[in-house]
Image (cartoon, rainbow, N blue to C red):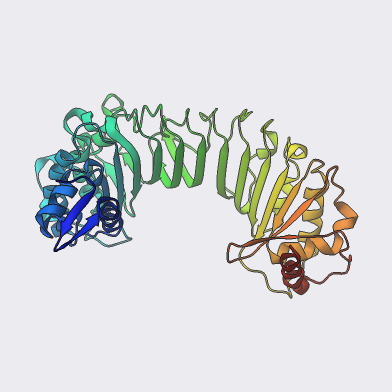
Amino acid sequence: MNSNHVLIGNGRLPYEVLIQVFDYYLEHETALYPIETLLLVCKAWSEAASGRPSLWATYRIKVGDETITKLWVHRLPLRLRQSGSHIPLYIDITSPPNNLPDNDSWFSSPIFTGAVIIRNADYLHTLKLLEILAGKDGRLCSRWKSLRLLLASALRIEDGAEELIYPLTYPMPALQSLHLTLRCRYSGSVPLNKRRVLFPELPSLESITLSTFHMENYPDMSHARRITFHRGYALEGGIRRRGLFNAPNVEILSIFHDGFGFNLPDVYPTLRKLILTGPKLGFGLETVSMPCLEELIIQYSKHMVLEEAANLQDIGRIHTIHLTAAPPIQPTHDRRPESRAIGALLGVCQDLRTLKADEYVLSLILKDWKHYLQPTSPLRVVFAKNSGEDREIDIGDVSPTLEWNRIVELANASQDGS
């Protein structure tokens, strides 16, 4: 076959265009309309698709009922063969909440006896698929480059069913991205010597997201550059542990916190960007040294977060601050506590160069900015619109009495004059 053109009727479709068609179909495929459908269009399409191993190395699976899972059980070995022996694998398995029955007769074989399913059977469907994707003795895990598991239900592993989670216990030396919504733990009946560590070796990991995360241990995060933590804990030695300790190389850290106990190390030596979301911190962040911190992003619902952020050890080093109020606050809301908290935060940022905020926060800042904002270098103020379009504001002649509903007009005027 000509590598540059594929014959379609009496015309020729450029190979590059055909690949775009394949990639688009792959991105939007479903269990009932899979990428294999392209093989049925014509011989030329079938040859082109079969000759592109990377097309068969991406698996976006929405866990469904027994029928859907059986389709994937049949389909995955074929795709793995099509992908060759060295192409990286990208795995994305999700399950909507409460989409499966509590009991599924298909998983009644001995390998699954002893597993107690809480709410749904999506774990059993998922782990069956992961068993195929891991290969014998986990040999295919060396090809996993991206893994995203978003599972709605929880799983407790009973004694005799430890092999259920073996696919998650093999080394994954090439894995770069890991995203987990995962609640999986051993029952007390499982002896300690039979419990395997989950995600034990991730030497290539760059980005990890832990959301609603309850496991026996934290994944290996010692090499991660970007970490997002949104609710969760690990049971280490039977003790619930909430925190991020073994992450010495993190550069971007995003934390959603709900006020429960949370532990951090004494220093994050390479951290450049810190993102804080939630009603309250309260976990001793002010005791952590962050000597390379340059950017702070806060989405707050209560002003206490701003007050705590003002006490960060290295707040004076920050060059960029991005403040957003969430949820949307009504104009009748008492703004004085927030205004004081914002003032205290900005007042200690002696090296601030860029201030980015939404309309509401800018209204508080620009009304009183001359009273508490005294940067040592020229300050760039950016209006972050909800549409995602940012506009810079010239504050050189801003009146201290500027009202918040004038911010949009000011931003539009700045944009027109640029």
